[in-house]
Image 1 (cartoon, rainbow, N blue to C red):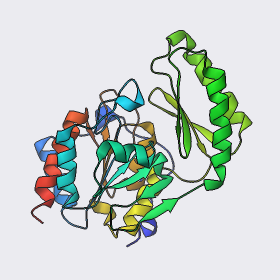
Image 2: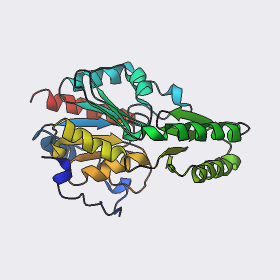
Image 3: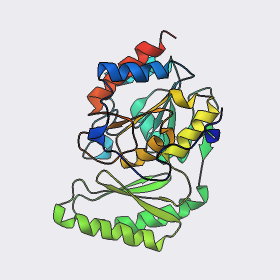
Image 4: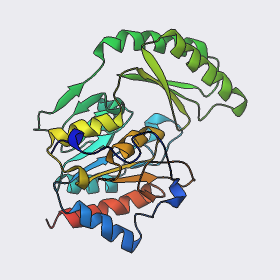
Length: 283
């Protein structure tokens, strides 16, 4: 059944009624037994954010390398069910970090999708916006060149401005510049992540839409789809799965979320991967 034919998720109106600390801990023995049982009922699929989920958040984007132990777990899991990395990074960049052809990759927040090797799955959006992104990137680099710690990172379908290393007194200036550039290039929209502002094509597409497309393309059961992520951009996927899938947020602090379960850090995500391997390998 197509995910688009299912009833709307409980939070589809955009109202968030819970925070992360109110969610059940996904590794609690009773809680994990419930979601693992649901996962085993249908054609399962696993969707994972990268930064802050499979790896700790790094000060610089290029430092977020994947550990050998996580790579081995992902390889084993991909032999049990479809596994897709859903990330704000370019497909080529995250593929270079993960180095597993058996996985699918949805880069640039789902605007650029490549299925696992042999599947032939491919989706690209907003190619006409690429010259506008080129211009916005050039302006951001010029205007932020004197701000110590500001990092402008170009991806195929977005421009990220990282301010994690910027002095707190100058963070407002970074936001002001990004907002001004967003106003000048109306085909783009500004979104906020963890210590990063992003300019993306202003199209009706996000991580949730990408996951919906992949669920249909891979003939997965939406109720047996698990999505794990830590960023605000992952909330679109949490909302999509809502009351029918297994959305898990990775978060230490308390904040509003549309997820149903929580873990605290990438170390606990690794434990989730072990549980998934154990569950799905015996099906």
